[in-house]
Length: 421
Image (cartoon, rainbow, N blue to C red):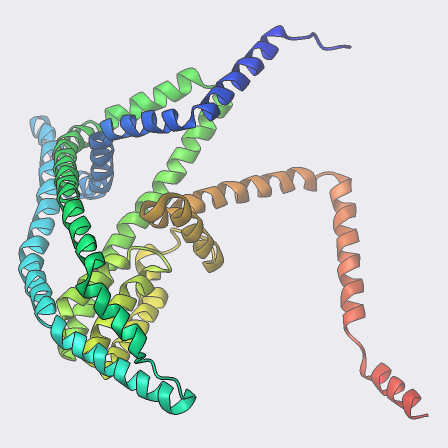
């Protein structure tokens, strides 16, 4: 029986093709429009992120700490949500305020000391360069202190080119400062509005989730809506537990780093610990990103201290990767080290720092969905005789390969005797 020709499908196919062609032709205008829309919705994005992170302590207080409130007196039941909401935000702002109040003065002292010690670091670099010049001169007979090169540098620094460079720097500094002020003001505005939005989202999260589920069920087929809700639930479990666990893990690593560096009297212990703790949020590459500039900073002060710092960081990261991380994160990710490396590289290449942070849990969701799909398809095919015949053929092929790869001792002796004869 022949299928009827559907003009409606052809119409939608042509419409879809024209829309895609229009978007590709006007890709720059589309990108600008999307950027403007994205900037308008930025406070809501910040609010959603903050509400999502605070939903974990909110659920803890609501479901466990205030579980018995309202069991005897129903009037007190209304206090559960405001109390859980209030304590969650007080805890968040209290931790942030404590960190800022403690870290900012100490960090400012460390940075001021770092700036004051720049001449000392310059002398250290000069000594290293002098040693390099002597080594190259003795080993290769080449003098890095070339007189012509020296004269060119002096003429550049005292000539018109240097003045032009300085003028261009001054002319570019003012617009850059204005741009920084604009970005800072916009970011502050987005975060203030985002905090207000997060309060509304978190206080009415049950209602918002119920409405979102109703929209999905109402406008999608039953099978598709179930799949969407399943993926949403899996993403919530993977991403939420991974983000919270990684934040807690990084705080502990930063604290342990500060205690260890303080005990062994390393320079800039607090500054280095903050860098190590913050960069530890990034999976796989985070420890290296944080350790390299810190090791270079200590190298300018004392090479031996830099060496022991590298050893200390390696031990600390081994402790984090093998003991602390698995205890906190558990089996949240559920993917091997190769796929973690793959997700961090691809996520960072596509979306920058947010991609490096969220690449692992997002890929873990994709990996779980693919694994479930493959398992389901294999179970469906296992009932047929063809899959059994294919499995038998694969087993026979594996046996043949193993037999070809293994040569018995008698065959080796036989070959050897034949060669001797």
